[in-house]
Every structure is written in structure tokens, then in C-alpha cells.
Image 1 (tube, helix red, strand yellow):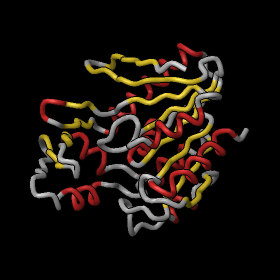
Image 2 (cartoon, rainbow, N blue to C red; image 1 turned 135 degrees about the vertical axis):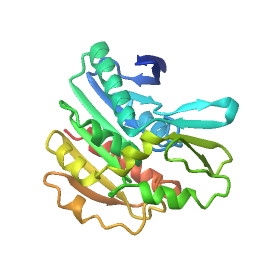
Image 3 (tube, rainbow, N blue to C red; image 1 turned 30 degrees about the vertical axis):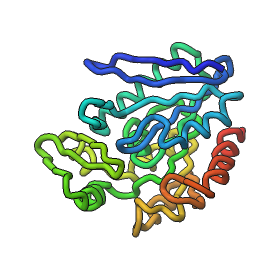
Image 4 (cartoon, one colour; image 1 turned 90 degrees about the horizontal axis):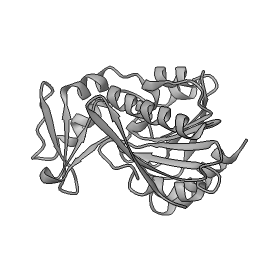
Amino acid sequence: MNLTQFSLKLNSKFVKGEYEGNESSGKVVIFSHGFGVKRDSWGMFTQLGDLLKDKFLVVRFDYSKIDEGQNATIVPPLSFQAKMLEKVIEHLQEKFNLKEINIVAHSMGCLVVGILSFENVNKIILLASPVTSPYKRMKEHFSKRPETKFNEQGTSKIKRSNGSWTFIGKKFWKDVKGIDPPKLYSTLSEKAEVYFGRAKQDHVITNETYDAIKNIKDLKYEELDGDHNFADEARQGWLERMVSILSDN
């Protein structure tokens, strides 16, 4: 199966991504990645896509822009990321006449899905999502790195563990401060079949209570073995569960 690249103009920017799999199925799985990572989400979405592409069209795209010269990832505001996701969905609907749209989101990519809160989606899987505003957690986590510089009225420069940088602007902070995940997901669960997967050994989202999520009507909450990225020995179990959810009619 061929891997097809696409580039969609959105205002003065472009949404770049790829699709592969069963183009005649009428069914798609769209991946929504988390903060400051690429479309494959450290390989999670590539591995899962490989297991789905016989039955589904599989789509990955980047919210962030890579600046090779500065070794940096530029992350747009969550509200703009939601517009990017909407643009991708519109493009796919026009091109493939889709009958079934499914979304698998990870970490802060879940918040983007919640912001958009679109119609006519079949299943949405939210994985290792924040359950409160991630503003304070982000500031505390990244401030431990000496070279990180926060500027909420301009551009914040965050040093990453691999030596690269992540740049974010003031609108990003505004979006993050005002976000209420349980409220977003409550609205979402009225429009689609929503699954919320908590990572039981999550090393990024810690010391949180999930009662507000568990109490959302019609949302299917479950706890899955694995760290924030369902890495190492937890990966196979995570893959099997995702395929089971998406394949169950």
C-alpha cells in the first residue's frame, strides 16, 4: 500500500501529513498527536496504523512545524490545532466520501479533539489525556531545565530532553489556561462514542483524580497498563486493545 503525502493550505500556513491503507473502505482512522512531537507520536501511531490499514484509511499529520536551522519544534495554539484537524477531516471527506470517521488522540492531542467537538464522528479514543488544565504542570516540568525561558507575552523557549527546542507563543498559554477537559469531553460524548484510556503507570500526568471523567455520561473509561506512551512491554497490549475497539461494530 502506498504512503501518500498531503499539504493543505490553512490561512497563511500549511497542514502537512500522510495517509495509507484501504482507500475504498469508506472508513478512516485519524491520529491526533501530543505536545511537541511528530505525527508518528514516537512510533505509537505508525505501529497502530500498520495493524489497521487493511480495513481502514489511516491518516497522520503534524500540528507542529519543524525548524531544522534552530533544531526546534514550533507549536501553534490549541485553538489553531483544532482548525488544522478540522481542515484534514474536510479534505478527507471530500476526497474519499467517508462513511465512518474515527479518531485516536494522545496526551494534549486529546484536548485538540475536545476543542473541535465536531459532528458525524463514529469513535474517539482519548489516551493519557490531561484531566485538568496542563498549564501549571507544564511550567513546573519544563522549568527544571536550566536553558528553558518562559515568556507568556512573547515566545517561550523550552529545552527538550533530546537537546532540541520547543517554541510556543502567548496564545498557546491562553488556550491552555482556560481549558477544562471534563467539560470538553462531556460535550464530545454527546456526539460520538468516546473511550478514555488512562495509563496506569503514567509518568507525565501524575497525582490526578479521574472522578470527573468517570462521571461523564456515556463516556467509556478504562485503565490500561503502561506509561504515558504505552512503551516497552505495555505496547503490545495497548495495540491489541486499540484494534479491538476500532474493529468492533
